[in-house]
Length: 397
Image 1: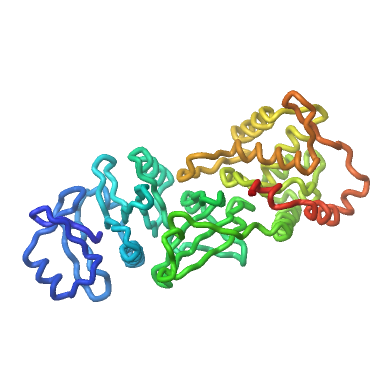
Image 2: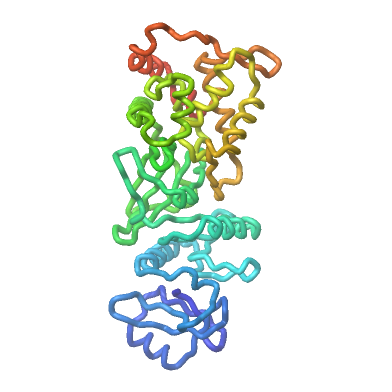
């Protein structure tokens, strides 16, 4: 850690530009204590690492669940200095006794109190959620910043995201999903935005990279993005997923595939209206191809009118049977998987695949399949996606 208290209760920070000689003199003339547990801590001054305070061996301080790496410390210092240069008067490693938490940086921006957590190692989902909820309950807005070294790009507009990394997801003022990231080696902010899940691990996304010396405060507190998802690229990715599922050919035990094959449906021939990006699908860990297939099989394709409540009930049954998994997004307080279901129904209505029959009921516009459907699936998809606009899919104005 970079902050400690002296024997007189004076707060001392090592984030400034102190000479080694000055630090050695200060260390010889003072005793230092952890602001949280009040135990004695040691000021460490080395050549390889940034000067910092460390608990003694055997300490039981609650903050010892996370040992800070050089990468973490240098990133935290750079972020703190950047905020200082912007005139925001940040506080490094403040301790909030009412919630027993110490974020990396506290700062007030446009009347809102923020706690910045620069996370460079994995912690449990339970701990992440517990810390996040404690901040919100204290009237503090947490921003968790992912370590830039953790980003795994798998293409120009694709990324591999773990369940832990999805916990960092926030909603920008533009309505788009964003994961803020920072790399102290390149000294750059990396905002991963327009995130739309493709599979459990892979997602479609844009990247916005900006050096810290060129970055304004809105890159962290109110990022705005004007790019949008490329519908044709999305179509190609979904086609790859459907083809890949078909190549599995039942050789691996997969309840989803078994369900399809029991109904004489091959994944490669799933209609193009299955696997569409809807805004709140980030709340669903299961891939859009799979959860939308279940809604089609269980509700939409039945030869009777259905309601949104029936769709939700069928979805929840699939969740109960572990066919669909829900994702926790603790930093987003308004939103849920239910909104994704409603958005999907609205898309089907907009595309005239489902029609409103009155009294809150809906039905599919056509239940029969073109005899040449299977031989023309690629052309059918091409024609289908040509008629889709960004506004219809994700509801952005």
